[in-house]
Length: 191
Image 1 (tube, rainbow, N blue to C red):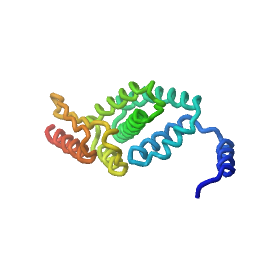
Image 2 (image 1 turned 30 degrees about the vertical axis):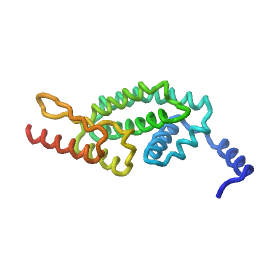
Image 3 (image 1 turned 180 degrees about the horizontal axis):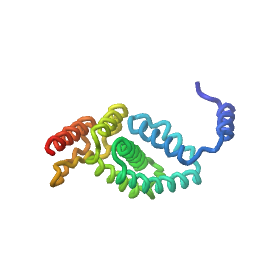
Image 4 (image 1 turned 45 degrees about the vertical axis):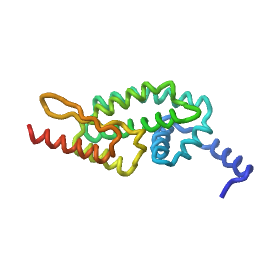
């Protein structure tokens, strides 16, 4: 049911009366909204972009700039399941950046380079995934089939003595991770 002007005004006043949302919560909201938009459900992200004021935009841009440094550190230092969660966050940021680039009024343009650095580190981190972490990402990509143009390339490192890179750019994510998993199993059996 569509709201009339009076109902809409009452709703907005109720929303304004809610406790202040922390910037961390906004980042979590944006991750989920970007993921949904990348899956073909853009209404939540579009509404946020239309409603957010300039100060809030500046705050979230600064927060994501700072968060990108933390995300890169996590990708360089985490392992196992924690690394998988960091890669998933980079996936969400990749979605957000690509959607923002497609927007008529981009909000995050000033931090595209930072987000791209975060994404590159996530691409490199695929080679460090354990089987359990690869399974988690595989499950995530099956559950949330994001737009292929918003995806992170899956890069796998193999062979203990010399590293070589296999890039599976824009292939179906589960296939990409299945290849990564097989490569990791081969590497383990060659030890």
